[in-house]
Image 1 (cartoon, rainbow, N blue to C red):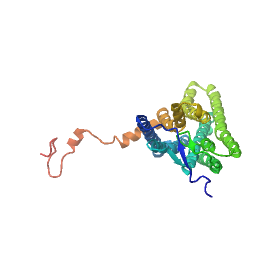
Image 2 (cartoon, one colour):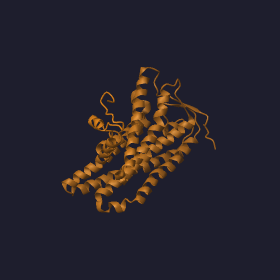
Image 3 (cartoon, rainbow, N blue to C red):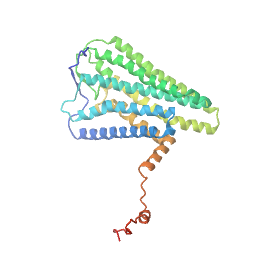
Image 4 (spheres, one colour):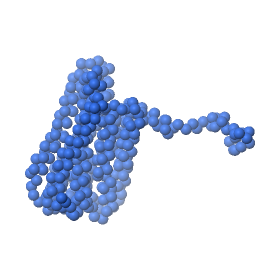
Length: 335
């Protein structure tokens, strides 16, 4: 069945008028997007190519990088194309797809960070049983849950939103999100509102509680251990903790923005609206690349082996520069 508003075009009003500022925003957006893509793909390649990194924590990190690419690619290319458009518009079907992928990005990121917290909890609180608990089958099952449960749940929410009749066609944002589309409707979406609250509780509140409890337990265990063990635990958990706080802050900003965007200045409105999509996918691979010794060492070895493998020693060239005809090479040519 076709969507009731399938042929509707929505107008996005948060873009500024043509001018020098637009070019600056475009350049910044392009640099951030390309850097995000490069950083996440590099992280994925390092984890994929280095067999010593084929461990649960890095497998989850690999999937976090994939998720970051989904979030960035769902929004930033369209924002950049709209910057130079005379009328900033989005087809309704495109808007609904954007809503779906942005929500998938947010919920799956929280789910992946939650299973990463569980992995760190097992590694520190039950180190001797770690390999028996975090088996290959267990990791596959966790990843299946991480993707299937949010995607199926969000597909239902997106369907409910897409069935709403529209009375308005103007969105005061840079891109579509679920609440913005719901606010365009002519009718009260009671079922969708209740379902959305349930999704927030399941995919945001519960993971937040679980991660906090995991770190409380990790802290209690670490305080009873030796100083070297405490340092190791801190070093192991720091990248994940920074990443989780960063993403939670971006999510909180996004929630506040959805409720207060009409009362914010245009500049603040624009920044907060893209912060959730712009910052976490860029910072996550950088945080793990800098803070995780195994990844930084693996990246360094990869660069040395693949890029700096050519020997530029002139004495080596001179020593080997003799051909079958008996000629000897000089710096200027054959003699």
